[in-house]
Length: 433
Image (cartoon, rainbow, N blue to C red; front, side, top):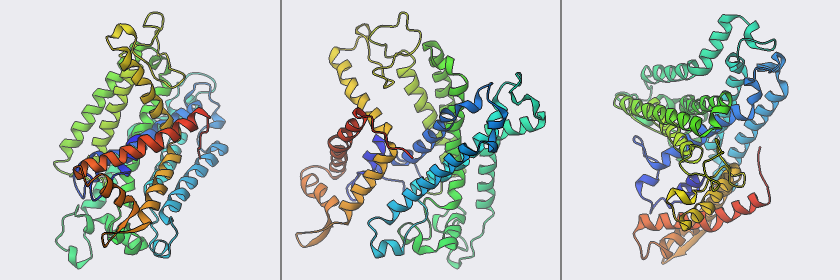
């Protein structure tokens, strides 16, 4: 969430290219934000519905039989999509409503959450032990194998295969695209589907192509599925994650898998270039690897004993949370100074506070930026917006433009969003859907 606010608060005309989305092909820091959200959302699904993986789970609560669970999933998906449409329509000016987009970041998250949640509740029973009166062992073995295969690998394989076959067998009927390659953005199958479905006027910036279009969502859901698999491992092996030695082993495995996935994605990128806007399989594989390895590093740092608790390692055997924030401070014996140890606390608290209300801060940041970007200001005879003018006049006038954009974004993050996040966290105000 902190990275999202930092990236979203950049001034496009000033920012360094690495902090903006890649124009067509390539990978930047900004291109890691949405895959991160999808991965974390996938991890949260089995954690929030962990009962489906317990051996004692009642068969009647499995899959589509759990009507209340289905209604909650549908409600959250609809609300996410509706909030995304609200942000797309804001500030409700006629020219905005006339070209309203039907897709976007939150809309994509809504679809990914719906698909992955339905996959999980339909197939989670196949991951439970086969023994026991309430187990899934009474079901046909073939059905169990198919459900487990779909959950652990069949789903992403089908999604990626459909994308590859559809993309590389498509021939655009537009005359200007007669000789264009399959992955040329404005001549791709995704551009044709989006333009044919709702028209150019409802695409991003009025182009033929929308970066959150229908076809690319097919592969984007795979990033959410990857988080789902990691989340299931956490739920099924909770006791191993609860010990320092177990956390280290799990973290090492996650880092190794993440590095391997990223390496395979880069290799695949030699054939299918990395593209966030097309959400190519190579881009999905690289970002899945980065998120998996990143989670492994965080797990290793906080739960793997690299930062010992103030009480020391003895007698702990498992992570000790700092004020229930899931953080650990180095003890005096780790070689870190007291100043460094004290400095870790506010940083960790700020990050956790932002993470406790992610949807609220995403919506708030969008509203703040959009509002300030719609307020016109005349400065020295030229038309500017309040958002860009403040950064250009007060910062870019005496420092390099990329640095001015970074400082501008950090000021918003540290002086507005972090204090507000800590206030909400201290009052235990959690805004969820």
